[in-house]
Length: 421
Ligand code: NIG
Ligand code: FE
Image 1 (cartoon, rainbow, N blue to C red):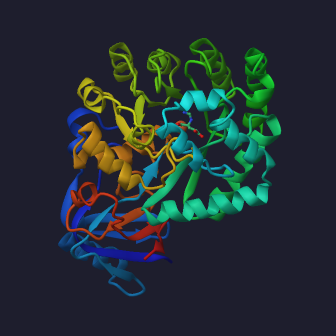
Image 2 (tube, helix red, strand yellow):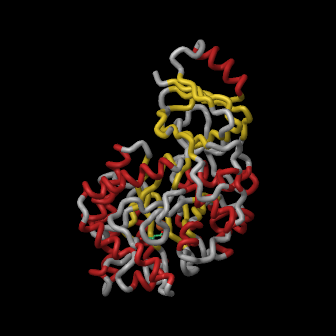
Image 3 (spheres, helix red, strand yellow):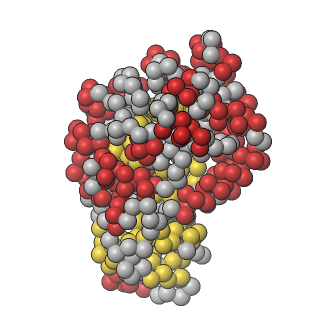
């Protein structure tokens, strides 16, 4: 039997009480803090959570003492749920560092894509890579996520853009999920760009996504979600709606890259179609914000992408005030956000979007869990939940947003196992 007692943290952030619905408005600042908090793990799950004295009593009563229990002294540290990254483009080959200089010289992200670079450059490199090569590189990336306190990531396909290459990416995601401690939740994103071969007939590519890719991906159980890059010059609102409607018919839950570079009505579509999240939202309209609040669509904000593309951030405060549940993510990908550091994203959310240090913690834990439909299992420290736990070398949670660019991870538990120490 695997038993742990994590003892006497200066702050234990439970994030409790929001497993059914994501946090909104004022709830975002309520972290359910227990001072001198302790937590007991049995096998893969959280067994009990409470103050030091409560837990001493509990452990005596229910375990008959500390025999066979491993104890971790968390004095002076923060204990919190493992971070959850709900939006990454994890599986790809190659890098695009040269695009940074092109963008610094004034070329835009979409210009680079339309000239066959950007997503299409990564697509060419990913198509040539074998499943083995992709797996090896992806495992290395997951090691780095874990070192930054991330215990679950969502991963999108979308650098294959042929049936076989999309399946290849999704198989790699499934394989690394099985092999690596970090859990990987898969999203099919065949509609990430129009591939070169279909440049002159984008409609034909949309038909391929709808008619062949979605049925095959869903049929093989390779993804839970379906995402579309709904953007001017990429996939139109109408094409996005057709793709996501078909995805729903096959049991894939819709997500959207919405209103990133141009206001497109993506947020409104996310609300209308019952998407679990709408992501990016740099150019979201007021109507889109209201529609998301009413429908309870989670806004996954990606301030690292705005930073790296040198663009103004999403209007997080307007969304929070309107009652939209907000989550945060790296958007990890080789073009617009090549970072695995969710803590840095949390710093940027504070400094560039004026979210508070408490709000960003709710956004990167329980609300991120909601954005990938996993809040029943992860995202908070409550009895019965998976024991995915981050311990910070810091006396209070505000340090996470204060020491920018510094990794405060002290140790990490995944499913009750100490995987970083
Ligand atoms: O979320 N916006 C579209 N897709 C990614 C970027 C992918 C890439 O540039 O390789 C994003 O920013
Ligand atoms: Fe993205």
